[in-house]
Amino acid sequence: MTPEKAPTYISRLTPPGQAALATFGVFGSRAWEIARTLIRRFSGEELPDVPNAGRFWFGRIGGEIADEVVVALKRTEPIPLVEVHAHGGREVARFLVDLFSAQGARVCSWRDYVWLTEPDTLSAEAAIALAQATTLRTASILLDQHRGALGDALADVLVALENGKSATAEEMLDRLLRYASVGEHLTKPWRVVVAGAPNVGKSSLVNALAGYQRSIVAATPGTTRDVVTTSIALDGWTIALSDTAGLRPEADALEAEGIERARTTMADADLCLWILDASSPPVWPSEPHSSVLLVVNKIDLAPIWHNEGEAIAISARTGQGLNELCEAVVSRLVPDPPPPGASVPFAPHLSASIASARRSLAAGEIEAGKSQLAALLRGDPRSPSPPVLRGRGVAVGG
Image (cartoon, rainbow, N blue to C red; front, side, top):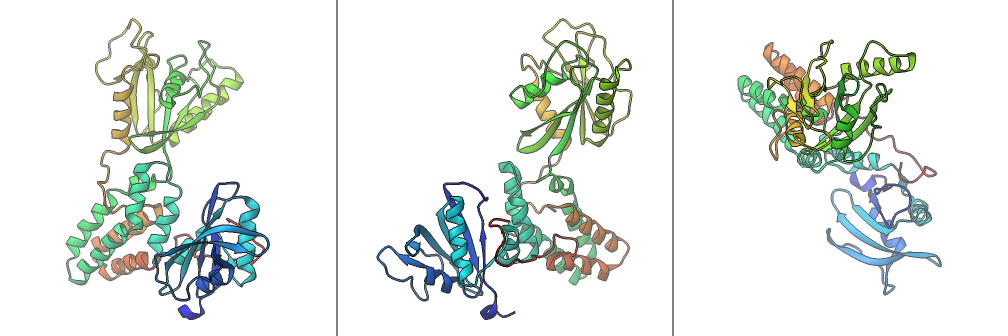
């Protein structure tokens, strides 16, 4: 479809609900035309006919019932893109969208709007993932990908292949895949489970790391009977920290259910913090786990056994050793953090496609590898579906 005939869409880009301000995106061949029809400057004059992109105006939208808005022309070519900033009340937002809809604009969700307005698939996926980032560190990595870090790296690999440098291309893909695990956890937290025998201080440690009393603490064995999870951030990485029931053989039916859930949570975790009590005989893990970090708690009490240095020594009560523990957790989860500007496969399907292309090159199937990488740049069929755009009558905000 030519830019002159591109349909015009409107979407609320800020979260739906009550707010001080709301931002709406208008995209399509008639975006500026409709804005000029609906919005007048405070002086009563019309908006300019063919303005330069990057300008904004204060004005009013509506007739007898009107609201103050700021309208910005983000770009004019190849397809106009306009933003309207208004008061964020629910009815004001509905009023504004209805006005644009009455002029022929179609309502779409913010995700659909991103797919429409971003220059390529990778940029669109990164923008959608960026909205889900919960820390500055993960957001900055996704922002680099949105600006083209991953796309540029894939394009460079294709150039190397076109020039017959397959070994160089394989090395470039290996550098991308070293950050696959990090990319998977930019919007999904790392799962860390705190486990051990009863009364070793698991709940106290979770509360200390969370900064508030998330778990109930008591001297009675079996107090924690379910998996209690809280979200924390360590060095900018989001972590789902799970407190579990103390593992012991003698337990009633309810506690036994909690112990079984603890074992399941341990099996699914990225890292298990196995807690030992310095003031009681140590109870070591009886079941294997792919990644265990031993932690000796209660070092503020008189020890009855000697820690040979294998475990991190802490006191959840006084805070001693918690900084060292946090550093050890981060080191286990992210031993090789990407530097600023690095190219990172930021979704599992991207890592899987890159790994598949790498295998094709290793097998000498150069054309197959080139095809797989080119598909990523065009838009991998396993990526989120392109927009299924909706007409009028759809709830604002999607």
